[in-house]
Length: 156
Image: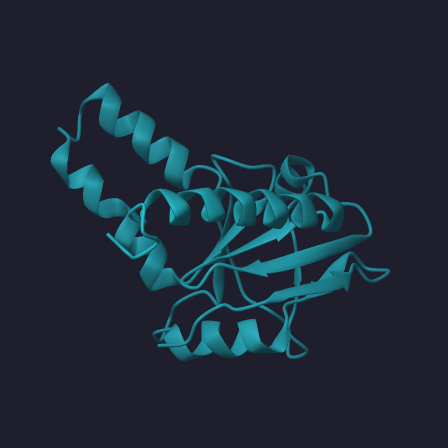
């Protein structure tokens, strides 16, 4: 399975396009099925960034919806929060995409952006916010890791 790894910085060109990092494009293409969009972008629920999903990974988000009555408010709220602001996009032959303005606004993107790999998905950030997020994540991961160890320092 191809994974999204690393942090890659890029800029918008004069026409508002940005190139998806080559390694990310490879991962997206390796996981795409015929007829799939190259990538599905949506605003993060947790952070001021954009989430990037393969079509198959994004489809897996619908599994919890099956547990709700399709005519209930809970189902409609969950479906709206997942799908209403999702944008399936294909790149041009150079691997460039145009981000929808709503997503750019959500993430506070201007000239430069950072693509941050998260394994199965990736995120698009303002570079300064991305650096802060990585620092916060490392600090939290360090705490989580230390909490999972016994007093002798061996894994629980």
